[in-house]
Length: 632
Image (cartoon, rainbow, N blue to C red; front, side, top):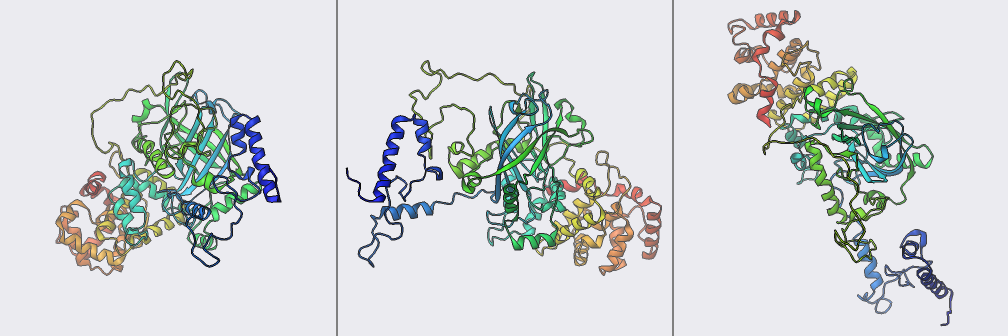
């Protein structure tokens, strides 16, 4: 064989090298050396099958100006690959950024779990983390008001562990059956492809359990400054099991060492307007500069025997566990010290699933977690194929063995003859038994809402813990949302009732009222024209009046009525109308309708001054449960 030019010499050299590699190296090493990657590129262009390409500039045509020939396989292959470069976008968490690093145990919790990667202080485990926005598309700005995903994949010696959470500790709904409808409501209108407040407020007006999540989303935390300056939470309740089989419920918390920072509206507009990928860039540049982001991992644990001691269901994903009762326990730290090598391979093809756990960690009866166990893996199989766990970013780093084989995009090399179990020809055996939760579950089949909903207490406590300026920003965001022209009077009334019950200091377990704290003025929440329309609707609709108390009455019970009276005056509602409302059902038995308007006002204001009005008229209003049950 005579080699004539330099290009042919190079091609000949590659072929000889490949032959020698397969002849003198074992199969695994030779496949690794010659796999198609940037580390072992050919010095010239080739097709996917390895054939040399001598011209990558021009298509094969009939003459210099003639039509292109279908036999130009290089052209067909190049276009066909290009047409298929985009895989299906994630339904949620489409926009994201990833980084790699390690997790190191700093505190001994071996008495709580037999998980190998948590076995002792000093143990390090490789991790890859993906941060994301939730609702919006892959190319959307990273400054939109939206929860942020916080997913961590631990590559442990006992297989992968995926801790898939968000930057908020709670969620919108507690039952996964509502999840598809929830996402549809939060996504853009299917007709116009515009995200609209009226759709969101309509859906969640049926689900007061969402109030706690909205107390985070409409708070300043709703727009994190970047991915490095935000908390992370496992959100769902898992179970830790130790070697003795003792099981404890657990919640996971990530706390950034550099603190939590957020963007207010004007700053978010400025940052997003200059760079819609600012958070991705910040993460990448910080790691490249050696400014490695770090988070501390904490856990809260609860003995299942004590779960009935709370006024809420500890497995309810819309609730947080009180840290004064169940304190945070330090576990370790996570450091991200390496950027990903390829965005598509280690971000777009990176797949997480809450079902992927390791011995020592197990699920709980958390309804949303039970749904996520199926849904995430099913989504990844649709998006990436049935063998998505063979993709390097998703594959375990430890040895693994099973008889799952073939199927689309299966590139694992297997030469065994026995692909069944058990077999006397294959020495593979069962692993050692690992403990699982010993709790015995029983009950009848039923579809129902949990008993202890308690939807209003925790978001109210959270609101009252803020400074006044933070409260004002929260209220202003709700005013903007409720001002959507397509939000009906009924939906506005429902939301105002929800927040009236939430933001008032109330003993939600006994139903009694504690001393009210003025949360916001009536006119700052309800547009004046809405007050007029709502009063008109209230007077005409007896069914509405019976099921849903008018907001004037709500403020008589929950807030300083002097504010409400001033608001009514500013809205242009006459005292006669107000007198009719007061005498129509709310004060019918307490204040005779014959008393003049001026006398009514004087009496109400005098009783407000000595605090009697809240106790005197409390019994005339529906309870929290009766007020919300009609809208489920």
